[in-house]
Length: 208
Image 1 (cartoon, rainbow, N blue to C red):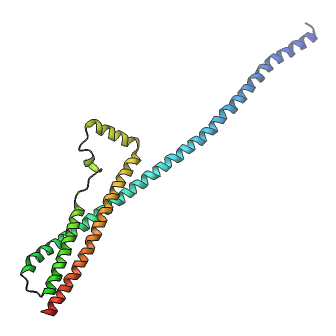
Image 2 (image 1 turned 180 degrees about the vertical axis):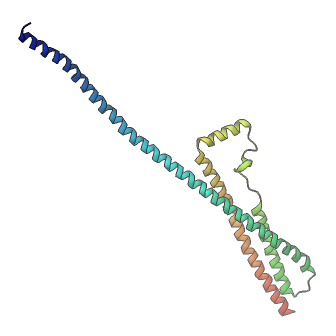
């Protein structure tokens, strides 16, 4: 084999080995670029999902906090109502038993009866306030359900826990607003009754 043919053979071999590697390198670089594009998009999608999950957790925590505050406020209202009933119920009973036989001037007797009437109205409002209100809340919701209906109900709640918290918060807010209004009105009536009783005592002492 001559020197020229040998050089030609070496050039052909080099061309055969170098050309495939270069041809393969081009698709690999394109594939790497194609792979990098979805990754950047997925990062943005994942960050959006993470923000929505964080917002959902914040909303659920706020709902639970408001529920805790509402339950605590209802408990305080029940305690105040029970205290007022325990204090003023005996006073009303004693007044109704003693006042008809009391020898008091007419003005004082009228003032005493007016005070007892206001006190009786206040106690009725307090009794109405402590009346159980379990509509759309607690076991009153489940008493008429079958086992299948209970399963569907709790499955629906499991799919959307925030809806359950919202429904509970609405019930607590509605019940609490009614109890607060009744307690406020009863307190005003009790204050008025006390003022009338003081005026009746003064009139009785003055006119006697």
